[in-house]
Amino acid sequence: MDSKLSEFFSYSTSTNKDWEKIVRHQQCKYLSNKCIKNRKSLPDIALGTCTVRYGKQERDIIICPHRLLQDKKIFMDSIHLLTLHEPGNELHVIPEISIPGGSVDYFIASVRKGKVIDFVGIELQTMDTTGTVWNERQKFLNNNSIEVEEEDLKKKNFGINWKMTAKTILVQLHHKIDTFEHLGKHLVLAAQDCLLDYMKREFTFSDIGAAKIGNPMHFHTYSLEKQQDKTYKLELSERLSTDSEGLAKCLGLQADANIDLEEILTKIQSKVNNNTLLTV
Image 1 (cartoon, one colour):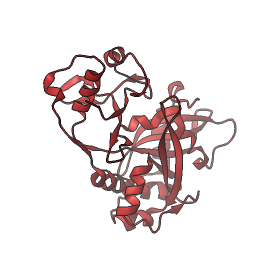
Image 2: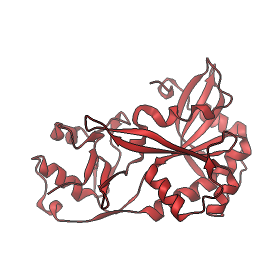
Image 3: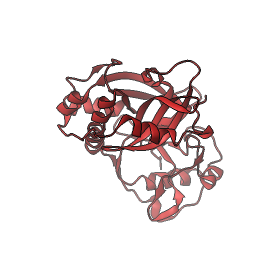
């Protein structure tokens, strides 16, 4: 039985690994910690499913947002949007700050002498699945001589929820972009290229074009390239941008941009520490 897992606990399934040890430790390289994707019925067991092969062409599709953290590339590719950043300032990556319209996954902050000078918001979005990938996980383990329950080897299909993934993230972005536009700051969506391709086909992207630094909303899309050593690497493939009106043409939803710049700066600054420093 061939498993449809492409990457498992941050490793390519095409490479030779001590999978029993990897499953036992349940570590995610990108989080530098235990994988936090757990099965609801078995909360102590991490799923470890990063990327799956799907469709007639068996394309490698990322299903875990933390997979996008490889080499901190998504942050490095957004530094140019820190228009107030100057040489000598520190760069910090701050997780999850709440603003009107919801919370933002990460902020890159330019910090001078402990004071936040500028920031860029980064949202991560990968594909949601329908059904369960659990059985594919168990097939992979079974194929590598790791004992699993026979029940878990019964064929159960999973799918990719293209429509819901795309619509949900566009709604969330539109709820948040008014705030960033009001403050004169930038918000970036980091996503795999297949998701943006779907958005272009299914939504009105007439006002979303080549990236301009003056626009508040930026789309950074990444391809997942298989290397000669059979590992995978993220490559920036396209950059687009728009404003709140451009997103409104997609969905027509709004959120009140009623937060003060000083309030966001204070929230970011309160989380700045040695552990948030962006290093390569």
